Image 1 (cartoon, rainbow, N blue to C red):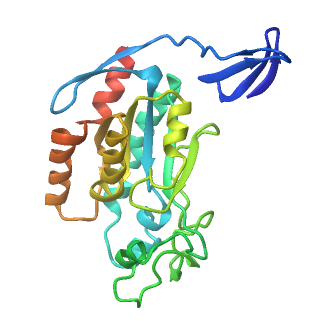
Image 2 (cartoon, rainbow, N blue to C red):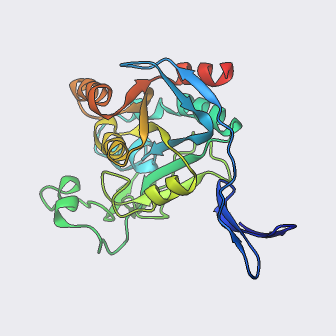
Length: 263
């Protein structure tokens, strides 16, 4: 944001955090923001949060993880649980957008040269050195392309998910979306303190990012029916237990949309 007004120019990327400046004066007072409380049924305790300081992060809902002709499906792994997340995710993103809450898409986006990926990061995706791995070339029912390469088809969000022009897109290249990305800076600039989590895999990138959000001081809520995993069910149960016990709360899309509607 950098536009003229009667009080000088407004300087800032968002209307939640800006200066007013003139040739000889800088007004550093941030805009007053009215709180809008929402009471949400959750586990292990229900919570009250300010929707005007909330955001949702949707993680890795990408063709290579979720599409029937993507990388994961080409290995014979069932992606229908991930595809089933589209409807509840669309419900909550629509409800949050209507109240002005930011929607953030956090996705793998790998450099073609892989220069920022350590061997330890590459290994889980190519444990014996015989697979294409991250940014490697693969041929699936979709065609030939590079796995999760930034701006490529495999890294794109699946068509079933609704996106808006002012949604925020952030690329990552680790399990946690906070490591070596602008995610924390973006959240701070938006004046966000409560984050809802959705996406795949619940026990990997979603949990890793939610844990780091908790460590950074954010209030975090995982939406149980908006996350899925290709891991065994006990991994999901352990994830939900750990979130409720150590890293925040869990709720559902129906509970959140009902709470937003009531507010």
